[in-house]
Length: 429
Image (cartoon, rainbow, N blue to C red; front, side, top):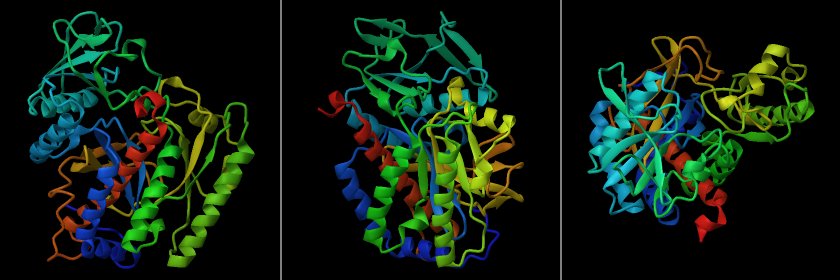
């Protein structure tokens, strides 16, 4: 199933998909060369937006939490990709400790943890789940909506190693984005690999650094393939000293919104796009769709009312938002049952392993869909994202999904570059 765009399938996007199809061999060769130079994150998910004239990533998550939404038919592909990742990071691994987020009330997130544990177990690993929740002092079973039971166990640290009762893993996999910082129990582990690395957490990571890396990657790719990088790259700017409650940084914010919208208007004019440009203002760190607003004019960020300021001032874990990224808004013209949708692509190591559509019944095509009212269509991808069909039109399902996979892998490569640049000196040596 591939949603049809509400606009005619002509113009820049169709041309872009045709270019990807015509240059599929060169694209795979380009990626192979890149992976010789850069190590992909263990896993990653990328939110894409398809405007009908542009296909671009708008968010990249290094601690993906929706494996339960993937098509079960692609489980073997997930297992195969996880095997490749584990063999590179810890080839002698037998035991793996999985550490999830601490919000045990979100049963759908816990189904993601269960699916992830299943994937890892089928690679030949003994997988157990440790929790950072201090109140859990004994093994605690949790019932899941699909009838499964997930066992959370309290973490134990001994002689600089992290594990559980009678369980000493060689690898620790985080499905926790460390928004509140690195807990002491995770620091300075002895001869245990932590994946993703600790500096991938939101206590260090910034979206602006990721999209700066993506700008570099997309530029290199575009030059190699002979395309305009703007077709796959959202413009952005940064405002680093904001206090929404105290109304500080409003002029910085307004100036950057105006600059982004001015550049986007020029590109719209170049391509004959009739849509109204917009920008997304969001916290430079964090997830869960918190601290995000859509703006269509710089005046909208001046004199925000109390409700708007309260919404923008706080992110995940109650952390104050002081840095924001102003990102070019990318419309979504894809719909499912009349509701706006955006594709989310999942990768393990350098391999695309599936995806789904995020659908929101309460949002428009120029708004953030990661918000109340969203649901997921887990069976959206009937075929893999790396198998174009040369006998089909550029916009038919296999080739539309191939285009998704290409752009998502560019974001994955940008994440690899981003992590290299932000690694502590000890990790580089």
